[in-house]
Image 1: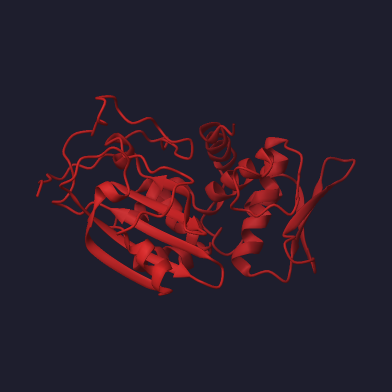
Image 2: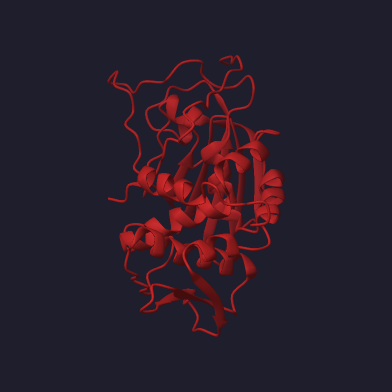
Length: 292
C-alpha cells in the first residue's frame, strides 16, 4: 500500500529552501534541483511523459506536447517524483483514476506531483479565505494551473471546514478526499459503493444534467453509519461524455455535529485508505453547530 504521508513528507523536504514564487509559471526550480532538462514531443493518446537518465546522473524529462498545459505541468512534476523517490516507471494503459489497478509507483508520483504543484502552506492560506465552493475551486485551479479534480481534492484535504470531494464514474464512488475536520468527526464514505439515491450527484447522473446544488442534503446519504438529523451542502458536476461525476460536500456554519460520530455498534468508523492527515496537525472546525 502506498504510504501517502511518507510521500508528502518527501515532497515537502524536496521543496524546502527552494524559491517557489514563480512555480505557477515556471517549474525549473524543481527540474534544476534534480539536474533534469525539460523537453516536449508528440506522443500517442494516453501517454503523458517519461524520463531519460544519463550516465552522469542528469536526466531529460519529456512530456506530451499535445496535452493541455495543466497536464504537461503535472507530468513534469510526476517525473520529478520518479527521480526523487527512486521509483521505476510503469506507464501501462491503466486509467489514471483506477487506484486499484495502477502501479503503486505511479500513484506515489501522482501524490508527489500534487504537493509540488500546490504547496501546502500557500495553498492552505488561499483556501482558508472563504468557505468551499466550485467558484473557489475554479479560481484556485486557474491560479495554480492544475486540473479541476486535482484542485478540488486538494481543497477538501486542507480546508478548515468538515469537507469532502468525491469522484465517481459509472454510478459508483471511486474515491473521497476528506478534510481533517471531517475525519475527526468519523465521517466515512464507502469506496466502490453506488452513488447514493437522493444525492445531487445521483440526480445529475439519472437526468443527464451537468451541474446542481442543494443546501439541505441529509448527510446519512453519504456517510456510513451516521444518525439522521444534519444538513449537508452538496455541489455536484456531471460530465456525461466522460462518464465522470464530482461532488463537493461540507457542513456549513450551523448544520453539523459537535462531537465525533460513532457507528451503531458504538465503535468509531475506521479511517479510509484514501485519506491523509495533513502534516500541520492543527486543522479543526471551531464554529458552533446545531442539530435540526
